[in-house]
Length: 449
Image 1: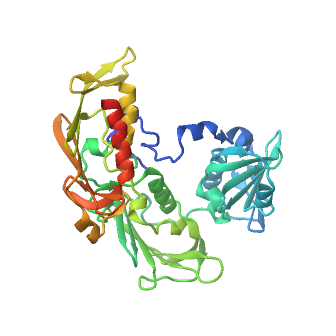
Image 2: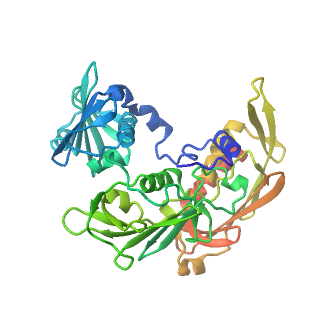
Image 3: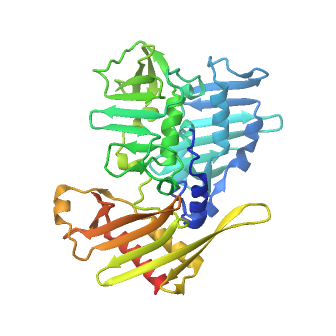
């Protein structure tokens, strides 16, 4: 996926200034969890030099041999070398934590989902993969070590042999807009935004959700990467079935500014759930694995960078928090400096009244404000029940291209509810947890008093 690099400087400043764990990548793991994770790269690094690779999945076994011209197999024709290389790279990139062997874990591997066995010039290894309700798991058979997996790509998690065959050819190879139409909703994702440079700076996918809400959202990077990679590397087996526009339960429209491609989609019948996908440009139909298509059914709020305000500290001039009879104003001064290597850094100082705040402490405290997110869409009765009494108002003043801008957020208690109704810059459509807002304010009070 092509990342929009327009706001690279702001992104760098955000990551250093906001210091949000996962703000730029939306990773769910905490720093402590990451430290405890063990990369399987060392254990499986020899796969990079594999001369043969045997994959067993769904009671089928395929042996691959690396020749001078690429990968070959007597069991599976029409291999795609790029896809196989990507699979090998992804196997090396699995992240997880070593776990003790238990009877339950042993039982997981009585029938592994997929087994990868590879041989290099010096040694051979065997990796078994299982995905179940308890999580994702790997067993390195030759070492008899088990791992609970925290990060794994779809081509391993839902392996199908079609994943290592050539992708389906589409008329649009590099879309700049994806429209997803189903019976329940129509969603448009594209690279257009009305956000200014500072507002857009935290969001690295370069793609935005259009039309679903009044509030403008960036599409979360990993979600967008999955959508884009799936559609530009779509895999399936050619079939005779034809899906027309009337029969389709979902229609995907890809645009690149010059032409468009339409994909008509419906679920297959029978025990093994997959999807028939008819490509409009050549009227060919493919049976596509379910995981590739199911990701396009979603609640729009679950695919976005769902922050109420994630303003980079490096741009902020002041933050004013008003609640009841109390007003707290934090001001900031920023200075750009360059070292002898011409690397630019930003130095910031924060104040309450004339009192200078401990910079590191304040940056950590700001995480609580910046990580506030919407919970769900306001219902009409909740809008009516929202009261201005005891509301909380946060005003951010920041510089964008030298011009002072303002962002105003109001948190209004919903009567007899655990939520605040949120109004941001006059837009009133979501609610958020009272508990998380109060936690943020309590942390802010600790550092400003």
